Image (tube, rainbow, N blue to C red; front, side, top):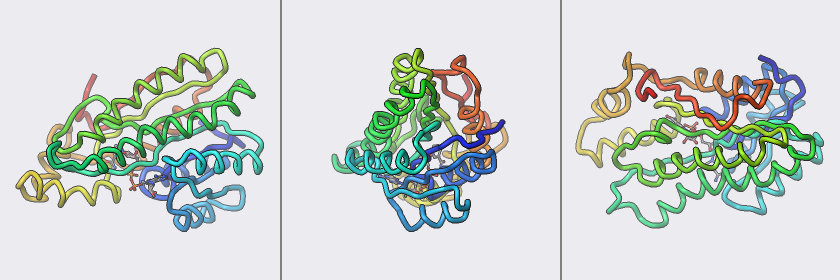
Length: 256
Ligand code: NAD
């Protein structure tokens, strides 16, 4: 599947899953916009991809920053074909120990961020009657785990947001889908292994083998490459037949 000359914005594209998706899209011929709160890492990632690509500083929770980033993309390329809304963080505590600020931070980055970036790119997609929006969900869009109240709530919420945009965008050439990965070894996951071990009172090995991989069919982590393959499929799919959907890629942790 190819994305020749398609302009693709990847939020949180400077690290982990978003970085690998950016590479996969660039290999498929796309022009990449790495939009991230970490401008140094985004600039380095875009430079690695080559001259056709750009970095923008974007805190996805800040409406002005989102609009400024999207304006900069339009100024350079004149169009936006694909939005991969991927920026994310994780904070793990039981509900009674989660502060309201922590709850709001996780909800804001995942859910407000996906709303704000979609809101900013949709007029440009509607103008050209064409576009694909992909949200980075999770198995936690469909399943719950202890310690992850805002994350699970936000990831469930993304399914709803995707379905609304799929309906609103259907006659305007825009399709919207959600990728739902299992655990992928990125900085976001590495950080939570000791945190979960502490909060659950178990060893780090037990967190990995029982909590993260216990329900997989083969005790394997999903990889950034696995997720990037699905991201390419959703971005390059040629028609609106595939919209309002979610695809779980998790070594069978969650089946539906
Ligand atoms: P990561 O920590 O490697 O990358 C996250 C990126 O988001 C970083 O570059 C970070 O700077 C950026 N970011 C954070 N806050 C931001 C903000 N306010 N505005 C813009 N950028 C911001 O994490 P990852 O594991 O690659 O996660 C990427 C996405 O994949 C997240 O939405 C995460 O929930 C989702 N996900 C991850 C896993 C996993 O196991 N790693 C599984 C399912 C879903």
